[in-house]
Image (cartoon, rainbow, N blue to C red):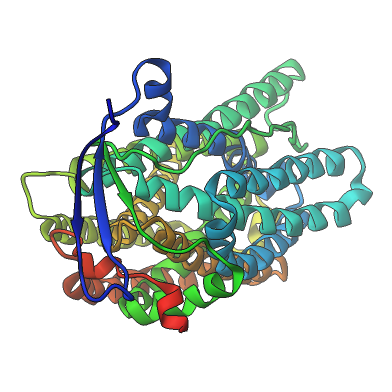
Length: 468
């Protein structure tokens, strides 16, 4: 019996401009069917990132990479995001030529090296240059991993389920940081209590994980559909030209660029200039735990409960998501300013670090929780908007490359500012302004570009046709 139950061809334009063919397949049965199911595949994708960028986030969430002196981590972050920014613009091209599975595998390789470099720095303080070099290598690998991840995560679900799939991925991915932070807090607290100390003035760097890779392109969408695009085998010249084609065919994506830049920019103030600046090492670990745990709820809430709320039109859901993210931006930063205005780099060195037993801690911890919620909602909303613009895997890979490239360019700049070091208040104000600009510029893009359904015209993405 043939696997194909139904096949229909929808033509749009001439043969040269490309056609869109949608096929309905019967899913494989048994273990193979379970393995190829999109829910299982996005879960596997989440666990890959659980063990790589999840551990990276656990280390970064403590502030300073778990070190008392944050300079090495700040300069390593600059190196990471500078190379990330450059290579991410072309990682969509690499993904479309090598395929997402190999691209994802290559992308994981830099994470274990980076995490090991902090362990080396903890044992041998002269390993500073190794930390920075590992950060630069990580940037190259991270561009590959996140581009493959983004294109796969947005291509697996139907249009009505993209928020749910983003939420599933984000929840599993952030469990890595949650568990890593919990381990750090438990070990550091045990050391502190064994020594009868209120504060252990040491550093922590004990992660070294590299995830196994089993990611796979979406052969079956979550409703059983299979979409094929009759394009020729990818070649490098055509794929590099696709960067231009993506902007030419969908220029409204430019209005999302400020959101892209801001999407990792706020980590520097949150992690180094708030968490590492105000709290002792064990409390930083506790803060990181609640921060990443909050991300699980933030992503699932916005993705599943708002952006996938099927009883409302997709445009209505897009505007609702925008309102929630905008309110969170201003609420979090107004709250944060109430604390930031009272300390500087000079005053934090002369003031005892806050412990989780202190009376003022609870309010400060709640702010960090809301920072985690904002981060998750921001990233989820950006991914959802990109997924609403297209269902084509190749185009989504290019969009994700733009996203990660600009995201990393902004992060490289602010990590360098922190390493210089720039005043805390300057970094904070620039973070607030950039986030505000991100949501303001996104509004006209949502109004003019987001439709209730993705049209076939939105999928006419043939780089070869433009090149010829």
